[in-house]
Image 1: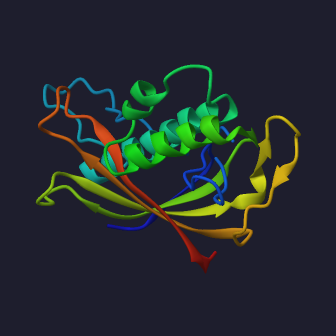
Image 2: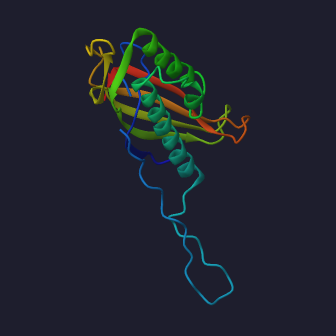
Image 3: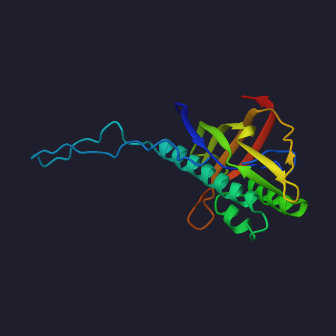
Length: 198
């Protein structure tokens, strides 16, 4: 499949303490709707070449799910004590990604940290495998800007240094959980690769 580039300002920080954090924009608009030319002949007109393929639809859905997961996790880190964020995080992610995000939010609450700002990540779909053994899978490479957010101590307002490069790669996998009700697409892996600048 041709690599499609999706750029989005997004929300998150999955690295529990030293890690960074997690801009809210939508992914690129979907391909235009299929159109039919008007004709008096009884046979239907052919579909336009703009009709999205199943791979295109999977890539767009996966990108949306990543953005939503990051939005929720970012909101959770801004106010980690507000409520139990686990159910909302699990709407968009499965383990191990969900567990890492939930643990990070709980760590923020325990240690007395909060996030300021919204994460900026450029997302690029690199592979779509609809017949993968573990279910349909979309792989995405993200370029995360660690300066888009900061972590501060709640009591003092002191900024916690991120300890990471300014921009580095996130390796993201989104999987369709076909055994679950509604067969949702969920972020299953979100691995910050701090040794890979982008």
